[in-house]
Amino acid sequence: MSSKGHRGEFRCLTFPSRDLSVSFSEVLRKSAQEFPLIAIDKDVLCGAPRIDGTRIPVYMVLDAVQHYGNVEGVLTSYPQLTTNQVKEAISFAGAVLEQPIEHEP
Image 1 (cartoon, rainbow, N blue to C red):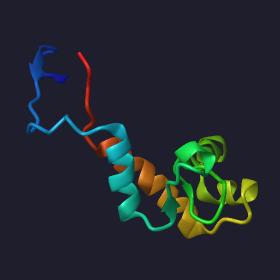
Image 2: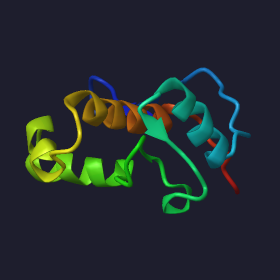
Image 3: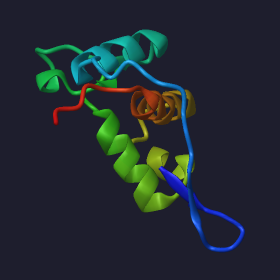
Image 4: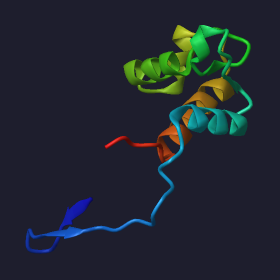
């Protein structure tokens, strides 16, 4: 990763090394343990992360956030959800994206 310096020159930014040998399925499983309102079950929605007790996948909640721009809009699309469920879906997605994953060359 690089960043522009004071005079337009680029300088490298360094980050602590991370273990990149973690599979994506492990990242999902680990993240789901931290968010009790999110469920992952291979027999429901083919294992897509979803709001527990529903068939509403996290990605659809995120689509609604993108469309409406706020949590209240998501509740318009999915009135059966609570504000806490929507917020937890957003937090779960953030946690997944923050995890290092295995990269193939």
